[in-house]
Amino acid sequence: MWLKLLSMGIKTGSHLYQNRQRTKMLMSDAERLHAEKLANGELEYKKEILQSNDKGWKDEFVLILVSLPILLLVYSVFSNDPDIKVKIDLFFEYFKELPMWFQILFVSVVGAIYGIKGTELIKRK
Image 1: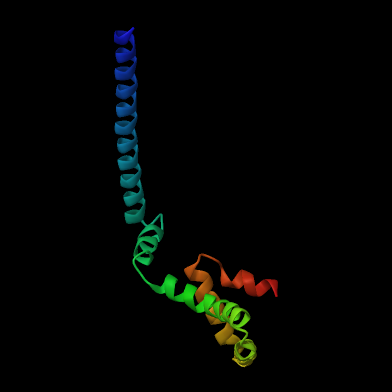
Image 2 (image 1 turned 120 degrees about the vertical axis):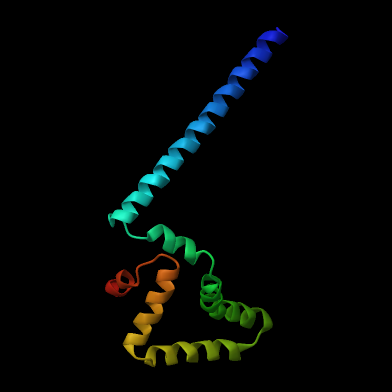
């Protein structure tokens, strides 16, 4: 009985090892084909762009910038400070008065960072 269990365990381990090696080979082939297509100009450098974007801090900055009005509203509710809400309303009124090209640019930049097409957001309005 123990011998049968041991044999079954070895077969399972061998099968898993073979699958891992096969996966590594397929991934290597896929990377090679991808590099060839990049070299031939068939594909854009999207992978390289995505990898370089992962190293930046702009996502966190934009997240803080977008979350700041909400955090201030939460603070105004719990601190019973109505002046903060008035100031936030004033901020959005001033933002509405900015030129349309700047508003579109800001929405596009925020959308691009998070993978949302800003032009689709603007078309909906």
